[in-house]
Length: 177
Image 1 (cartoon, rainbow, N blue to C red):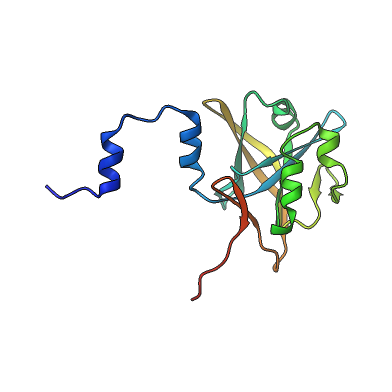
Image 2 (cartoon, one colour):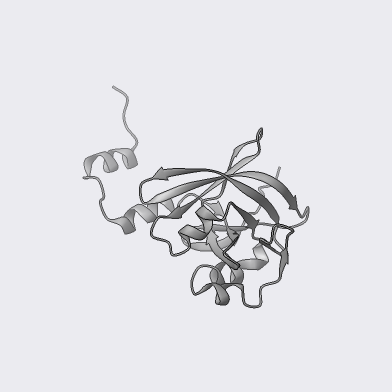
């Protein structure tokens, strides 16, 4: 029988970790981009920081992100018919923090945005953005997976995206070729 690497042996020998904090630490080893998702619902702007954004399909153009079922903004994002994803540039760490807590007025305060024809806002200076029509909601544990069909998008060639790894912000640095 082949020998197991020491770290796998240690993991196999201990009981499964049940602590949410430990699970979050393990998940934090996967670096992600950082986005702000916005919606316009019942005449108000809604926004939140999100790092669960991902591409789903090129044809049709589909993207996804997830939202806690207990989020106060759940109804706005799932009932408004669409949303805009702004992929934050590495200079927008303060904006990521601003959209993570507080009421909606505080989240948008002083943030440069562009209002689109559908009335949703995208953040000025973002590395990329995707304006989406709500395509599907998928029930997934304590979250909903929100799938959107991209209606419009754009990006900046020279913008480095903000990243999140082990509960810290950073930016991607390419390795030498």
